[in-house]
Amino acid sequence: IKWQMDLQFGNTAKKIFEEYQEKVSLSFSKLSTATLQKLSAIEDMMEDGNPERYSQVLTSCRRLWEDTAKQLFDEVLPNYKEKLFKTKTGKEIDVSGDHYNNKLSAVIETLQGKAAKNTLVGSETIYLVDWMEQINNSQSSGVHSNVTREQAMQCIIHTYIALGDILNLKDDV
Picture 1 (cartoon, rainbow, N blue to C red):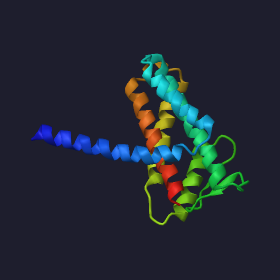
Picture 2 (cartoon, one colour; picture 1 turned 45 degrees about the horizontal axis):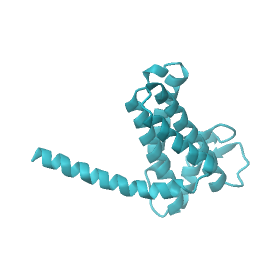
Picture 3 (tube, one colour; picture 1 turned 30 degrees about the vertical axis):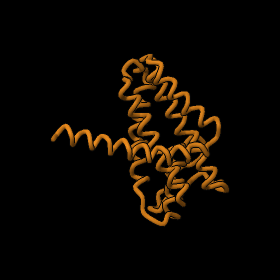
């Protein structure tokens, strides 16, 4: 019975993710060609099986994150010229230059304000931003050999889901 339940849950999870993936793929297809090339590069690096490439996967995920943040910020807040963005809580965050996480936060807050239903995208993104910053701190400090295939896969999955949720939120608004 335990084996049958594991199999059923696995099949259910697989079907749900495939449905989610189909929707996210449509959203990703609307991004720039340069951004889509990062997705392709990530796939190529994982498939070649070279452990030295796993740290490069993290870098590519970070670049995908940054490109998507910039593109979404420009689309959702096209006329925003201020350096600071005031959140609903009154906190001001810097959205100038390379503050990509703050740009995504501004995008999420703007989209959630327009959404017909509440979403968890914001809190999920905060978790992912923190997680990616920890991995990137390790990567930046020269611990490239410590990046495992599992960490690279987690980074890909978390990046895909978080960006997918934001893109889906944008499409739903």
